[in-house]
Length: 132
Image 1: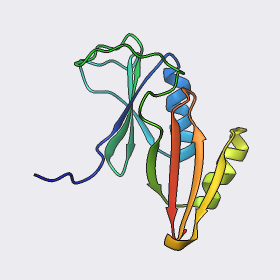
Image 2: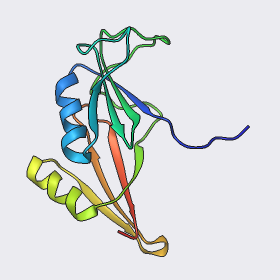
Image 3: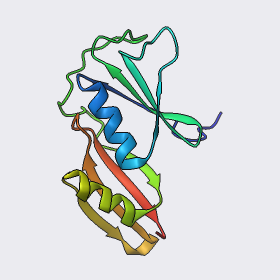
């Protein structure tokens, strides 16, 4: 058994449209309806390279594993979600155009530039740009 890659993240929100728009605008992810029995009103999946990597579900969306979730609150033990990206300068310009707060960091030893920004639900994103 081995882990091959991160499959997706799931965000429970009371801001379905705003959250999907954020990921489409900032990261250029393609917005699609979640598969049945989910509906366009309770689930939007955001695709990169033909794969749904961010699942966005409304607070009333049916879930296989139910647990209490408070949109906008800290994400418990998960500090952030890291995405390997390209186009550092373009993403910086998009964040500025969107009026979003963000912080940057450089890890010169491994050729990494990072951007940290929260989504509309206070999910902290770490956007990693290697050699970019």
